[in-house]
Image (cartoon, rainbow, N blue to C red):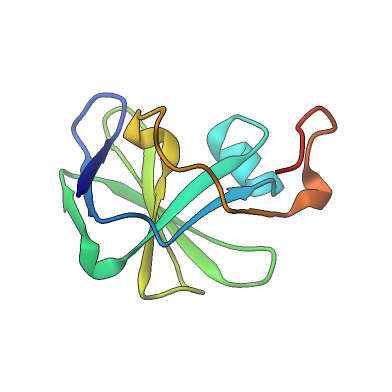
Amino acid sequence: MAREASCSCGDLRVTCQGEPELVSLCHCIECQKRTGSPFGIASFYPRQNIKVVGRYSSFARSSDQGFATTFHFCGNCGSTVFWEPSRKPHMIAVGVGSFGDPEFPGPTQEVHTDCRHGWVKPL
């Protein structure tokens, strides 16, 4: 099975083979700023199961625990589609919303719950 994620304009596409190994809901302030929503949701795939097509720009930042994460976004529309967490070098994270699939598997874990907005219900 393959799923394709893309940016808003379609210039950047990521094909993911198989099911994600992990789907994580993150409430950290940095994910809130990155997404413009009260959380971010990432699907994690083994690096060898990912194929990226299209040009992208990158931005690296340190996580709360000090691990760098490099985010890749479309240079045309600005959508962040995938990122590389140095803490999990064998994995690539792909934004669940980038798949545009309401049937995509839901999160199996929730992190940084201390930053969860009060109206967001826990998993």
